[in-house]
Image (cartoon, rainbow, N blue to C red):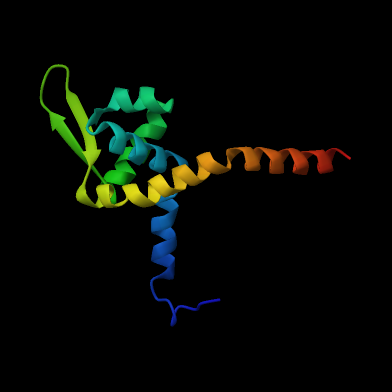
Length: 121
């Protein structure tokens, strides 16, 4: 195990991975990488996410520099989101995780079924 002398930024790495590795953050990045600029309600519709959770996720992604929020002062107000250059650089690892999940869905289902069957006995 690494101590703070060996890895002074390990706690910070954990903080970043917690943000970029959470379910909704990954799905927002995937959606924005597929569709480009999207409005809040378009993202909400694509993801099937609650308004509150999407708002929190977008704020954190914006804070971390992965998503850009653009407010257009129209009536009604129009707010759009797109990936920043850093967000674009995050597409490749996210895409790899997504493909891995798709390729292993049946194996995961089998493993879950085996595990659940053992618990029932």
